[in-house]
Image (cartoon, rainbow, N blue to C red; front, side, top):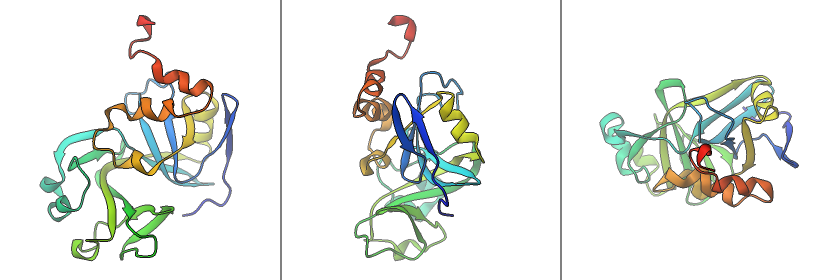
Length: 199
């Protein structure tokens, strides 16, 4: 599923493209507990909707408890991440290739060396080919036009992602760090207190 047409979204004076590889950063106005203060990596965007995973919600569940063989391959912390409220019983693996020309069986590119890895692939076939791997339980999904509407109403900022965003050892400050590197007004949001009443 590749984007046939990439919708452009205008927010805070910036024009950003909703496409695979971009980040959705939850705006302060987004209070849905599934997404408050979240950073979502978009994995697929097309006319039918969008799909992504929340990058900053590690779970207490060790990968070794659910997907034994993959524990040796995943980036630290070696836990499942809560990718979103949809399909929480399933798992998606986001991987970064060590070499763009050496993709293992079961790898589907998303952007550059970043892609999705089929967890049915035998672990031994991917060893040595990945720079990073993270496994997400569930995902975030939007129907046709739904994400564009949420961005238009000010729920999300759409910003470029960096490879390090996906595989951070400690994703606690990911929201603030992503906001801090944005141009202009967006960077100001990085300094807001957790409780706006303290402002």
